[in-house]
Image 1 (cartoon, rainbow, N blue to C red):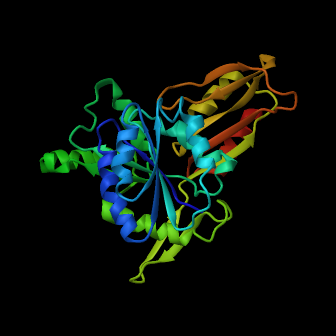
Image 2: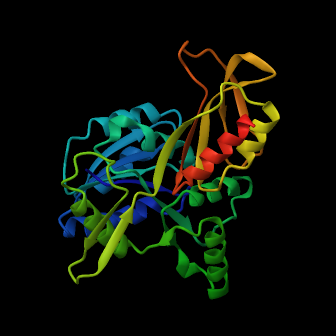
Length: 313
């Protein structure tokens, strides 16, 4: 398998700058680097810049990979040949909604030659939460991260840096804060540890020993589970169920029928950062059944089953 890394971060956070430091670190360790760049205007310019650093770069000019350019992104990933010992980095543009994209990267069976995705979010420490109406998007990009890298810390006084680091922990306490050097070593070791695996799945983590004998572990951070819903549910009870989903669930969606209107079926999904559930009238295949698909980080599946069971009460 090939480690799959989504690189996120708000506009100007320094993602491409980080890549210019990360690529030489990986190539020096013998790790081949593949990069997909998604940028509204500069993808081809940055592709030339990064390609000169001994990386195979595919530019995706156009819309964000979480929506308009998603099909092109996935097709590019499908066509990546088996290449044990390499890593695949996706540099998403600054407007990317990471939860939506992680849903596709986690559940698409045609991506089985990659590991379940990691997410490195690059944070401009000097401008953290100074984005006006985009502050919510910046927090959301941090909330799904498995690792965080802080840029421009030299511009901050010590008190401001402590405030930013504390705020990031409040948003996402799971994410490890990494330097470029440590992250390069981590990705190299992970690439070596999974190079003999033919497809994702089968084990929930990878353990390996470093050259100094230190034990390291990579646990697949994101997972998905599909659970059946009752044939019909009470509408108010279902809305309460969605609102009470555990924080570990990054994305939730599926099909549902309601007791007060048992004929039509609806596509439902929870909108991150918003209350309530979104419903769209659907005309599914005759054999489609009510279902709930959950995508998240170390999700409590037994708790989800219990919450669904309560819908039948």
